Length: 112
Length: 201
Image (cartoon, rainbow over all chains, first blue to last red; front, side, top):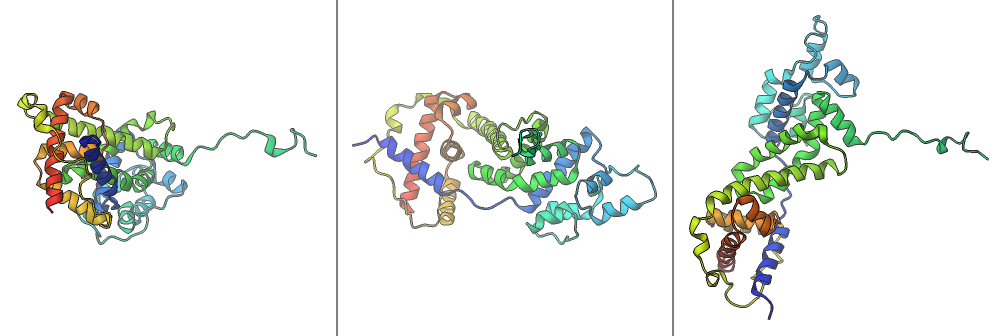
């Protein structure tokens, strides 16, 4: 007869293995994490300018695009516009937030 | 025939940076869209890893966020010796260790050492308890979670840390500041109660 502990160990090991969850992160959590990382990043150094971001192949959202064409030079190029955006607030609070514009990370989190 | 001087394939080319390296460099340069990509690529894995192991569902979101913030801080030191995902899950594992270490420091009663070995010896035959392989994973997960939710906090914590996080007893004892014996006793009692509920259900 084997050690009774071995049987128990096997049971719990198998159970833990068999219950691996398949569900991914909720979009509101991704949104919160993203917001926190961008905040931390901009505290450490200016964010990469919108122009450089676009040149790196990323799509800007409609508000960033608007800010980019304002006649204020590069003064506002590193601002984190998401901080003032209602899309961010909605995305951090709910799943399937009603935001859909292109180039918005929060909208992308909802879609995937 | 091409010699070494004219054959372009013979000329060593500088290695192009890995996708992970390029992403990290962009993040460190303050590229907000790269940060979004980083979250999109890895949040699901970190979330699954943490939620599978944690005893308090309401703490999962905060811990996932902590993992990402800690990783952001440590990114300049990432050498690329492992996959970015593996590295992130290592940070998550460390955070989970901190979580349970603190939990068990509080939850293991001071009189734990007074208990005799007889109290924790498994009773009955050395058989694996009823384990219905036909149950699909979702049902199994739901049933295990349901039983875990009815256990005392210390039992739930010690079971999940030991088996779901696959943490060796010696590490559990060291991190939580308890003796191995004390952790083992708590674990034995937790196993016994869980099994009883499992078999009764």
